[in-house]
Image (cartoon, rainbow, N blue to C red; front, side, top):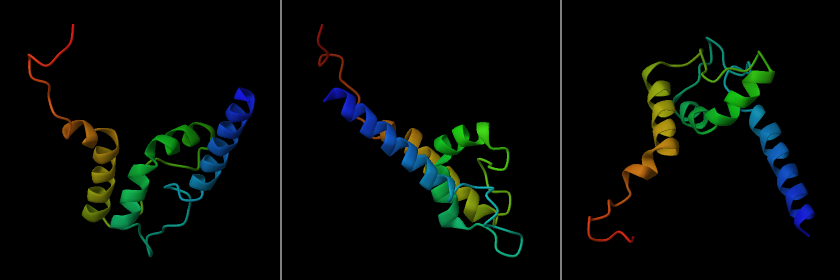
Length: 102
């Protein structure tokens, strides 16, 4: 039973990586005539960790789309990176000194 769960999880991870590769920055879908905008920046920020791993094996995939609209792409990218990698930590309540357990 445990082996089936591990196999299923592995297959799901591989499928997710294959699907996300098609939406990765630097894959040739954006150009100077059709640059990436705000929502592309958000998407690219969300998939940045996966894109980093893929870029190690495929030199045609980048973490950041170079053909972008500028500020709005950067804003969306940054917003997604912050919300994905630290935004939740900012919303945690800090414990009071008397609330911890020894």
